[in-house]
Length: 428
Ligand code: S3P
Image (cartoon, rainbow, N blue to C red; front, top):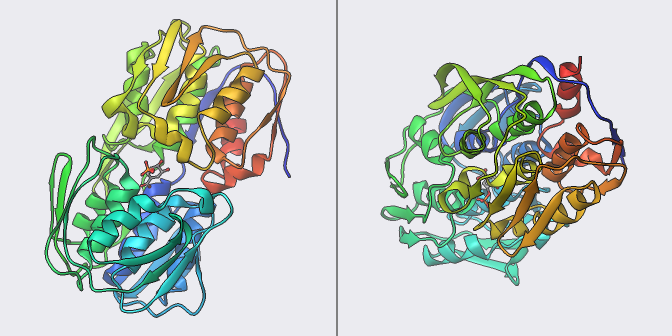
């Protein structure tokens, strides 16, 4: 168990390159495995979750060669082999939910398993639409292990009451399978991240995207090289650090700015914290930019709800830290699904941030933070096996009067093993 000590920092300066997007890295392996031919994936994530996906597809008989840690070649015949062992999604909800859509329409049976935390997370949200498509999936009261009986699927029109990219992607990946009959339409209340749609399109799928409604037909996909953009969810920790650590001014390079992910930038703007987007460009169908962030001592609170939520769902823990340095009440609503993440991110966040002096109140579907507070620190915080909680607490520690300790800090390896090293690079 790695304990991390974090002390107050003088300021943060210089520049860093943000590592690969986790969501896009997962999809690059999955969708290349569905395509025919050779894809070269560059700047692949070093996060453990993405390697769970990579190993899972190897176990489905896809030839995947790791050229170096960040360069992966996928040689696929768009046909999988029946696995001779349970397929392990590790800690990764994205892996389990998206892969269940791919496996449901195969001509063999399979079993999907996950670690203790993933086995507690709800899977009914994918079992339900897949069952309507003709899938047969046994679970333990809606939880993994999932026993998937390979079936002939048919297209559906599905209106989800959740704005979840994982559920949407699961259904679209089932619908694009060449064995599926007919078109599949997925409608979501608010637009969630659209990396699956963009990558399917990039590899030649027959897909129509019309706002919150996406229609896909069974398609033959053609392999292409994919360069992975930098992860805005990882950059978010640094955006917040730059805004709250006095005297900071630095550049974060290669950040994906797909507008289904830029909720953090909208919030910073609402709070009055200026950040600059430099050098905007496109790679593999995705927009990226360099971000300049500077300290701001006059941040104001704001309201975050509704259509904001899917655009910043993973950033809410670190947004709570940001809100502690903004004048007034920041209110987050409609984010109840935070309770179904790697930990209950509402209860755990509130409990731990209070220990260091954040004025935060728990709501059923979010939280209220009252700022601006000077954080005393001086406590040991629990990360609850949750990478994003661990890194959010670290950012708070950079402005605490007294040093803090974070238990089980090694969980950051799930998405962002380079995190502490990049913070060190910005310390003057
Ligand atoms: C993800 C979607 C989101 C997000 C998760 C990654 C994805 O989950 O929280 O970290 O890659 O599709 P939900 O779809 O459950 O909101």
